[in-house]
Amino acid sequence: MTDFVSIVEVGPRDGLQNETQTLPTALRIEFINRLSDCGIPVIEAGSFVSPKWVPQMAGSAEVLTGINLLPGTRYPVLVPNLQGFQLAVAAGAKEIVLFTAASESFSQRNTNCSMAESIARLKPVAEQARTAGLRVRAYVSCVLGCPYEGDIKASAVATVCEQLMQLDCDEISLGDTIGAGTPSQASNLIKLLTTVTPVEQLAVHFHDTYGQALANILASLDAGIRTIDTAVAGLGGCPYAPGASGNVASEDVLYMLEGLGLETGINLQTLAVTGEWISKQLHRPNNSKAGVALCNQNK
Ligand code: HMG
Ligand code: MG
Image 1 (tube, rainbow, N blue to C red):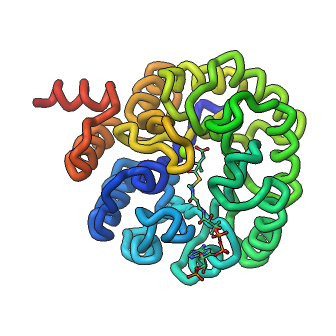
Image 2 (spheres, rainbow, N blue to C red):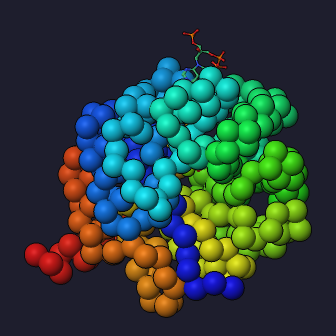
């Protein structure tokens, strides 16, 4: 197993989609450029969803065309349907992110369709993306619990992963949308899922509502996971997951990975400064403990 861990920074999408204020396009662009300069290999740049559903992500085309695209850095964008796909391609997207859920209620609230309808809706998007030579990432939400249904069966998550593999997705990110999971649940789920998806194609996406995210990531690393979604300053949440707190903070994960001797290619100091900067822009506290500690040391 490799010593390199690929961080997928989701702050500019999962983070900003949950803020009450909509950050101006120029600031979204500066945010992504700053993250690129930290050496982050993958940055979720925006979301081509309905602006009526998630107004904070309106203007993602201007963001994608306005950022400095660093060679070697990937800038995936969320796409819920063919309409979003066409808009993303027109804005120059090279990688799209599909999203679905392992919970019927969440699927309805998030995308206004059942789980089966969601896969049917995503199928032509995945096919067109493949034909156009785009990379396809996919999320499964509610893998360790649903805000509306409570516990979710691991077998339900496995079924969705199988369906996404049939759509020829390059990677599946497992979303603990409400941050309810614990390490043994995370590791048991990953063990089951590797029977339908190679571990190299799985990523984990933890929210930190119950303070379990770092422990869950450690358990996921032990289970062979090497791709981790994080958000600088612990930004985030989901507009359709009431009570869910932010994503695990990128700085905290990086600090832990460095302690484990795992490589990411990211400059932690620069990332900590970026976390402070975006927290100030959003007039919110910096939710990364490592980020706050590092910035205090440098004062
Ligand atoms: P709908 O209302 O059923 O869609 O929404 P529709 O096809 O009936 O269209 C209704 C209107 O939306 C039409 O406009 C369409 O043109 C427009 P009107 O005729 O009324 O003026 N529309 C669009 N506009 C722009 N871009 C589009 C688009 N599609 C339709 N792509 C839909 C269905 C899927 C569009 C809607 O439910 C939606 O946009 N949902 C997105 C919700 C969302 O973004 N949630 C957050 C992301 S998921 C997440 O955060 C979890 C994750 O982080 C992992 C985890 O933690 O679990 C990924
Ligand atoms: Mg999320």
